[in-house]
Image (cartoon, rainbow, N blue to C red; front, side, top):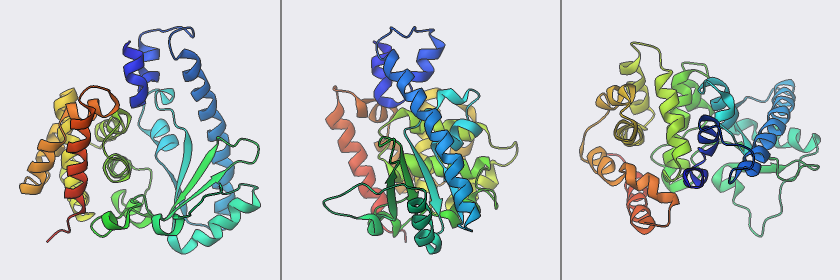
Length: 289
């Protein structure tokens, strides 16, 4: 039962390992399949990264594989279903050409919003479920990008030049959870939690300042508030205390309660959760004064 509840939130592999479930447990075979998919994607990721670098394309792998390697003590606890690369928008044309030379194909669409969303999807010709996404910006909706965007430039600012630094991974996880998605999976918040725990001692004030400078203060305050309440995490509490506490942040913290996240994937209270998360999305879209 617990495994069934964890699966929609993307954290079933952690429970599956910790509770010693066998492969015959509910969802066990599905989890093993996801592990195999992750291993396939890791190999493809290395080849793509090497090809982009060889062609002088400024790009950085983000989210899944980097989180698994850099944030989780056991990398297998963080499975992923695709590869995301953040690409300098000026180099996107060449990046697409590299993918095509490697044999990757863009899925057919009835309509194509790739340019608007700054997101280009590719599938491996022999493994159609192996998806690669090139992002010019991790914030896909233009209305949200007017207030806070997150491209390769912002990633490097967050990490002080290192896109794999803990602060850069924290900013990426916050953007993924709140601006890419609507705080609808625990896995994304666990990414934020793990990144917060990896911050160097004594760096919280500097990290808080960078998040505010990147216009992620609202999103960071909400994520960390939920983590502090959900897990009682000290690092999340301390960083949250250093973030803005104005009206917008207070309203965001009230809207996104731990229940709002947990119930996002459930059948009970799902409508209430959707209403709260939708209202928060509207709050995010308001321009800053």
